[in-house]
Length: 105
Ligand code: FES
Image (cartoon, rainbow, N blue to C red; front, top):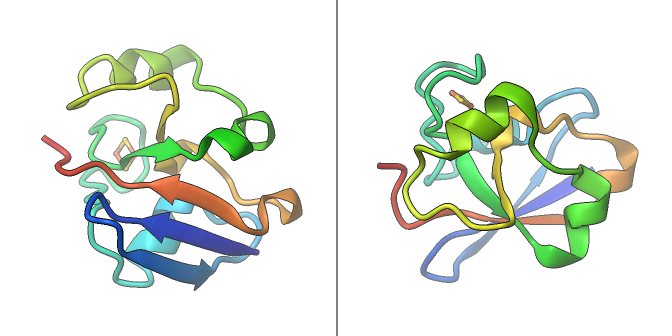
């Protein structure tokens, strides 16, 4: 599936990410800046924060549990905030658009 990462200044990067990988891995493995992922996907750093494009919220679902708690500490949380390491890519996500925050701190 193709995942589109849009930086805060409007640049768009496209990555073909395997099903089963996370949206975070899709960014880090393709050298897309804006996702730091300091904890490596353990849901404990919140430096993989992104905003799911409004059209895609139904497909990706919403944060709950620990992810939801972690989202309380991110810079500029929004309704559409997610931790990208907690979104596993599925075939339905082909074309997904996520927006990257200006800063992870
Ligand atoms: Fe650390 Fe997602 S990579 S919370």
